[in-house]
Amino acid sequence: MLAEYLPILFVMALAVLITGGILLLTHVMNPRIKERIKDSVYESGLQPQMEARLRYPIRFYVVAMMFILFDIEVIFMYPWAVVYKKFLSTGSFIFWEMVVFLAILFVGYIYLWKRGAFRWE
Image (cartoon, rainbow, N blue to C red; front, side):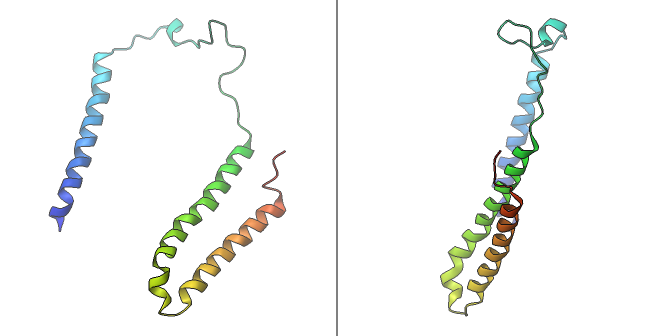
């Protein structure tokens, strides 16, 4: 059984070696000399007007987390849909299992909606 995984392990080890070799080669062949002018910010030949790092509003992170939360549900729904017909003959448990899962997601969706998480102001 381990022999079946040897080609995969070989390719993974080869990928790690090649990546590490390229990174090492770039550091060896391109020595970096620190200079203040080279390390300064270049903005179309003009001096920078403000700090380069701006704070993002927390709103973007909330939207990203909601997207991840409601997008991950598809990962659980797809395998369920694939095996639905196969297990339908054993009873309706598989159907009600997904109904409960979707109900829990729907409760979370309603909670976020009531809290105004979907309003972009």
